[in-house]
Image (cartoon, rainbow, N blue to C red; front, side, top):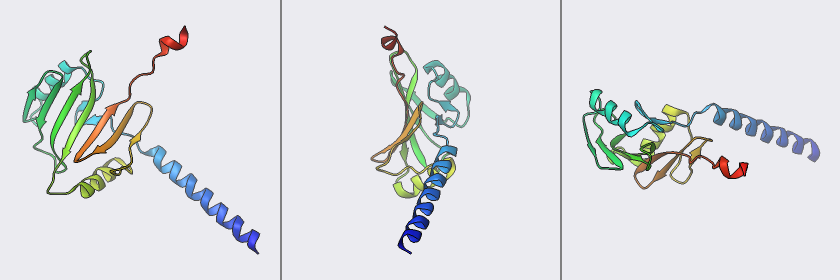
Length: 151
């Protein structure tokens, strides 16, 4: 009797693990915010900010561009960070305090099919998303140095 119960329990655990793996595999880690995507050049980002009406107010601050977000219920400020080559490598989105961090994360997760929490970072081979204080951070993962492996 005990071995039968143990087998049933193992089958249930395996099914739950398979279901969790399938559901997490179908969720795509976001690669940007609105029409601005990680990996874009600074020139491309500035061009979008200037030409798109939904980007109301922004400021070029050297290796960063700050934007006051007007048409989003979850976020109030966006910071776009660039590397030395001028490539967008990080987007920091400041959550609206009035909603609260947990409700904001819940809405973001439901929009993207994710399970992001304040203590859990989510990512794939190219991008990762994490929470720092009251900010949601999207980052491009650094490319692996393939030249060193070839030597």
